[in-house]
Image (cartoon, rainbow, N blue to C red):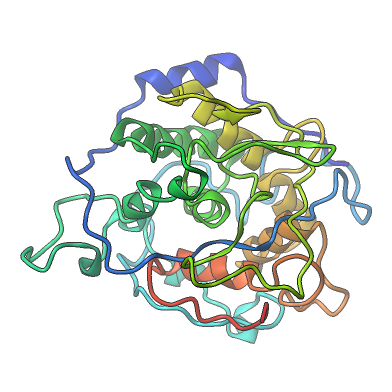
Length: 328
């Protein structure tokens, strides 16, 4: 099992002093319910049998893909809110998007026009694209949706953790939206292993509307083997507001890992790739614990569309119909 980096208390504490991201005063009107979550939970094991322990622990080790400084304008702009199903091994040769096709971090927070009332001609400046998801994703658990302060804390925490782990901050954000819709009060699951927080994924099903039921031919959700501590919803105790330090802890556990499970940084290292496929492969490892022997990221266990979903989020997908048929 790869060793893990747990962010120091001092780093978690500075989140309170981090510059907040400016958000609109009110949430936009929704035109549709966006897709977030995934089919059958994450099956990531506590250790990876095909790799040696990661001596760097929770930090991206390959300088070709490590990100050592924060740049919020690091992409092509807002991209396109559409979905393309990607198949194969995650390489550009197999048709997956190059990193030069990714949207910028700030533009991942730039709301598409369809989320606004028709009376508006353009979205408010620097409006959070995923705020529309974050301010509605908690409703399925009958808990309060994220406040603007909590969304500010998610934004700042991503930047803090990205700096510590040398992960691309866009990748962290994409996984947060994929796993929990950014709901800071996502319930903690415990099927023998405690799985809390924004990046846990274990409790979520394939969800795009109440009319889409959980498929009968797939296994029930199983937990990520992270055994983390960060949560604002545990055993019936719901925290509102969710403390900034706890939000940072959730994102740290999913990105840098815990003593019981790998985070995104370890998964990137385990991918052994030096090109953009490292991110898509890492997403599959994070979701399922392994990559199918064929190398096809849409095969194996857990959520077959997972890597394709992440690739689309990184290129501008927010609320367009989910166009992946790998999970039925």
